[in-house]
Image 1: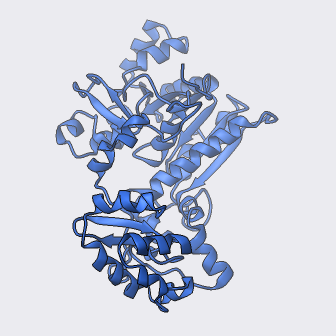
Image 2 (image 1 turned 60 degrees about the vertical axis):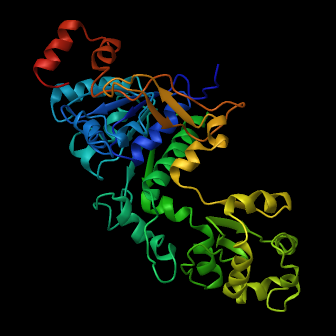
Length: 400
């Protein structure tokens, strides 16, 4: 049986779209019982997002499927008194609440951290937002591209001619979610904790925390990071090179690796060239060196060069598309992709990513596919002690 360190932990996931659902996706795979608390009728906006219009119309968009496997779904109207009462009963039996509303929304609903701690004094409450719970930007909505731009990440992404560019996937959302997940796990791991814990996750700060090299070069050395495209700012030759067919990444960061590279590509004299012989010289003449290397690389394809360079201890690898990466045996053999047969609401097999973690040699997994909207409402309410008559009344009142 897979090791599930969060077994017995219950998480209430009130989140939408990506940062919050991604955080709770990690917790579910680590064994937590994640209950997705969704709005009646519409649910998580991600249910309507993705590349398959048919699934979007059914409320099972590909964007939703990507990070909601293993969760249970209950629909609750948090604006109605009876709906609030249902939610507060859920909180009494939960360990964690995660929300990504704008700051102040939960307080206006009367469901903020202080109010919920009256129901559960040791509650771990995680609020994810674009800019945090205080500061002059606190009320701005959390959009990945806006955060990418304001963090400085876009300014150093792309080539000098093309920058600034956004990262090709919602990196601020994803890093924000990952940051939230480990903060929640840390709070749960505190054996000395005797009271509730409020976790304030700012997507802006989360992505900036991952920009250590770019930021510290400015803070410590006064050097502002610049966009270098596929070049490595710290070493040369280190970047992406055109071969006879296909692109090849090479990271010959050490002197021995550079000399081995020159041998493999049939240009041993480059290692003796005064422009390239030493590390700092190679940095000054990086584009001349790149041109010389690419001229030699025309003799073979990227797939042919890669094993030759690897055998000579020169770090290298082809540049794959997403489908090529997913099809690679390295990904498939390590259990990175989960497949659910005939998933409810989708009515066909679906495959989604797991977490990229191995625990005791196994990839954490969940047992169930992403839920349809409100799929588990009746079962969860019954767990809370509501009778069939109670449930029928709540539905009639549109509280759930």
